[in-house]
Amino acid sequence: MLVRYLFIFFISMLPLIELRGTVPYAVALDLPFWPAYVTAVLGNMAPVPFIYLFAGKVLEWGKDMKLMGVFFRYCIKKGNAAGEKLKEMAGTKGIFWGLLLFVAIPLPGTGAWTGTLAASVLNMDFKSSVLAVMIGVVFAGVFMAACSFGVFGIIF
Image 1 (cartoon, rainbow, N blue to C red):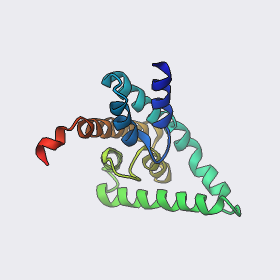
Image 2 (cartoon, rainbow, N blue to C red):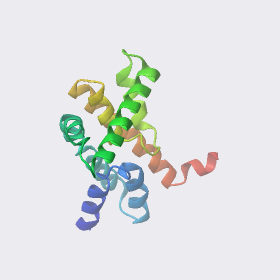
Image 3 (cartoon, rainbow, N blue to C red):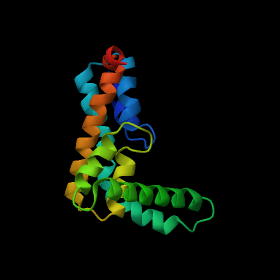
Image 4 (spheres, rainbow, N blue to C red):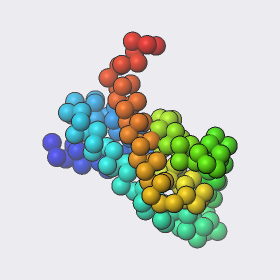
């Protein structure tokens, strides 16, 4: 059982899967919901401080490399685009709420990784950006859980 929870934790750390893929997977494994949900949220949040503190520096350092430079430039472009989208959506004063909503929307490319990268590009303070990302991750997890359990099947 512990191996399944560790698997959930590490899957939710992956940039493209994150919590959006982990919660339905945990439901499919028939794991008890609350422990699996908390594990997925913690796993999704684990890389956030490192992304905030180091991702921008690493991407700038590696953007001129031959092989990996293409990927690094793509990540910089994606982070800048997300930052601009947040500025448009929320303005300069509502950037916290814009980041929270950006991360809470369970679509590809709007998760904790991209949101944190955008926050670091926008020079948001560490505490506000981590708090906004965490609340967004929690909301995205609730939405994905509702989808996984078929709650929206009644509506749609």
